[in-house]
Image 1 (cartoon, rainbow, N blue to C red):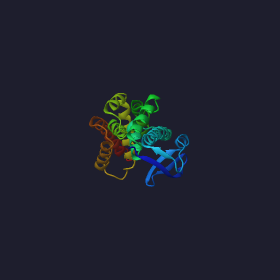
Image 2: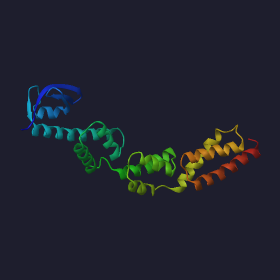
Image 3: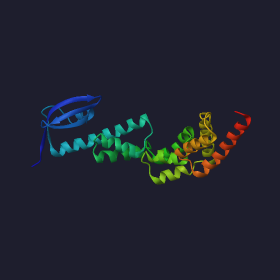
Image 4: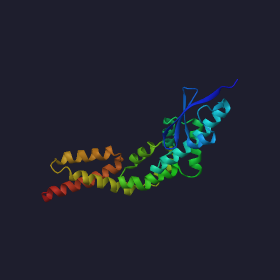
Length: 218
């Protein structure tokens, strides 16, 4: 014999979302559209099949809406959206349906997001290649998408970024000895993930600049 579910309470949480109580102690969240469509009100009795169908469809609809809401605030990867939906206790089926919907309509695209980070954010932030890879990995983007995006990183631009960072660091070390300046700048570049070859080239330039300043008495 199928279970039955009796609506014992309906309470608005926020916006279009309500808490609905069944059999006194079962609490679920439903959208206002679901409440209207299924005529949810106190005393309404649901058979198990209808109850599960209602919950499933509501989760799918709200998961899609929530996904769009997250993307309207900032670009996000599939993994980031999934994590948020799981944390908010959406059903696994609803999460998968929401991700499929967002991908089908190109609202979410990990390859595009990785490329945008490489082409726009990394240069603006003066990230090294390794730093850029780490930032993309934090978003849960796949290795293949990262590798394809990183192919477009320009080594010369990375070198210029490292030199700019080093020169700015040098200006903050006026009262330090030559050895301290070199050590701190080298550490700063290594911390930011610049490769050994780039760090070496930059340090050669920085050493020349330090020596020129010493000759000039600056």
